Amino acid sequence: METARLRRARHEPVQDRGHRTRRKVLQAARKILVRRGFQAARVEEITKLAQVGYGTFYKYFRNKQDVLEAVMEEVFFQLNEASFPARVEASHLEVQIRDGITNYLRTYYKNREVLLALQPASMISLRIRRFLSDMREQDIQWMVTELKKLGQQGWRIQGNPEVFSLVMLHTVEAAAQDWITRRQHLKLEEVAGTLCEIWFKTILPARPARNPSS
Image (cartoon, rainbow, N blue to C red; front, side, top):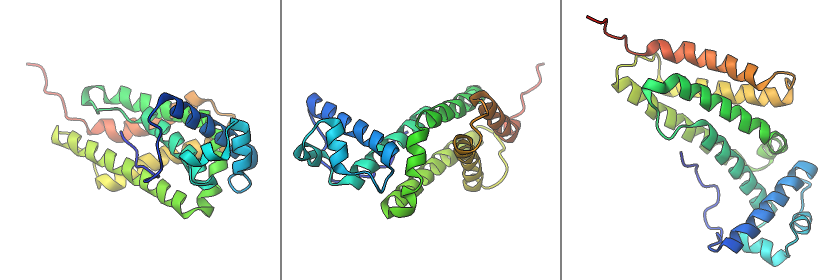
């Protein structure tokens, strides 16, 4: 599943060396973001930690907000890659749901420090709010499409597909956020298992009835 691009006109490296340099800057920005927060982070700190000059930084990023948005985009790309299968298979839906939710939570926890640091940024930056909204809407529309495909195969999922998708996806997102902020005493398996049961009880009973064997 491809993510929406937050950045439209930024120069992207074409050589391996450029990709490695850009990666160094992103890794440094990630550390500074966690250490200092979105508002306090400075380009000077990022370039110093990455051991690159200002000219190199501005070759790939326009300003501080630009590179920190790139960090955020990378994290959300990882979340989508971890949770959404390339193709939904009705015959393996239970396994795909379990793997998707478990991998999402594992990736969310791995990036928890960055995600916590980015929460205040959504209140400051209109671009970040729009990005988050676009990402959520893209996820919803992806699930709506897959639900319609299941419907064409005889699945009878009740309710409006868009509302259904919004509620189900928001449930996982909200649980993950609460887990890393208030309930880190819970094990990943406990959170994933409970979310899976909610999804299973909501989706799996809608599967077509099997014809009795003759």
